[in-house]
Amino acid sequence: MRNEQEVNKAIERYSDTVRRLCMIHLKNHADTEDIFQTVFLKYVLSSVTFENDEHEKAWIIRVTLNACKDLLKSFFHSRTVSLDEIMEQPAIPSPEHREVLEAVLSLPPKYRNVVYLHYYEDFTAPEIGRILGKNVNTVYTLLARSKQMLREKLKGDEYE
Image 1 (cartoon, rainbow, N blue to C red):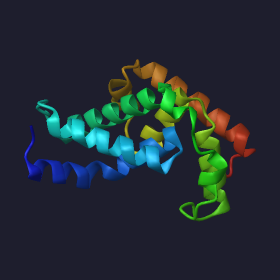
Image 2: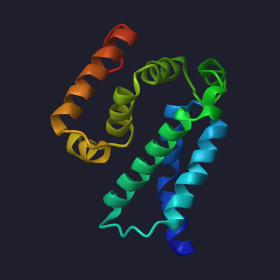
Image 3: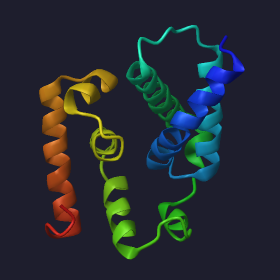
Image 4: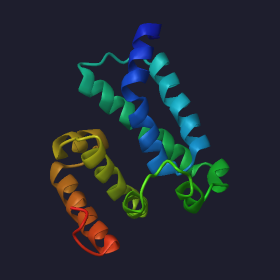
């Protein structure tokens, strides 16, 4: 079990990442907060010794993704809030950001994950490959395909 200082430091460092990942997958604030608590509870109870900050961040991301997948597979999740309700909330400041977010959220999960990790968390393809357990070349392929899908959805190159 981790001490209070370690936990507070991890929450301070990774809370935004966990919340963003959850929102991308779950599209629901309540579920996001539930998974947030689950992830950090697992962190508190975990006996894993991290080699460095990157290892710790990768562990947090992996636990978050797995918790999101588990929730999405659960019976409880059959009652969700629609994307339209989320998009009406003032957290997304401009129509351009809204359009990009809608396009990213509409991608299949395997593409959505690599786009998020690469463009929002600044991970390289080899790092993404380690986090997701995929070959580096597969990550490059997923990134290229997702960029093409986004280009088509956004009808042009204005967002590159």
